Length: 271
Image (tube, rainbow, N blue to C red; front, side):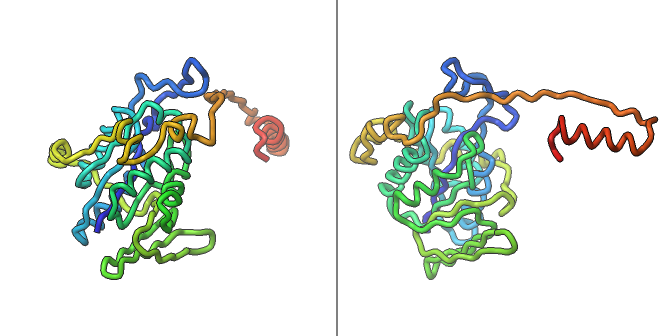
């Protein structure tokens, strides 16, 4: 069995985000970058299946040169090999265009039984790319998995997802794509021996020539802003203002309660 995990490098959750000079993106300098936290659950789930079945785990990412760090972290967690698709135009690509690129590369790889991904990317709060990948390849998909049970003999996977009021259980035939929910497992830390081994694991790099050529077969018109169906005109970083009002605790309880209710209704606007 061969499993592929789609991962992404995202800004650290504690990074201070600022808009760029054009106002349509963020400043990427001096930001700490990490493996998307939800992708850690996807990698862990794939590695656990590998430990039970002897499956091969391939890690795939799309992004700039620095994205290889996220790839190597996933390899240190237990992945066997990596694929890094990189092109400067990826910064302007929407989920539709990214899904076409990733899906086309997975089709070129061939013989992939299961594809895992985190439920969303925290930088764009997007859950769309894996779904676009499944559509591009033409395979079934299940989202927000809280439990995954693989039957390699019958080439099927049972996926349990938590829904309002209960659980939804679906059985998919290979090949299939699954996005996993936070809490499906406890991602392992990359050990020092794992980090050292990750440096020696094979990692295929696919540049513009491979993307536009026979390997993936995506034309320039399908990349970047030209191939996207969503464009970002401007972004604004929200500002948080804080104020404090203290009610006189020596006042009568009835009056203090009335004052508090008025503040919550008229100023805080939470009731």
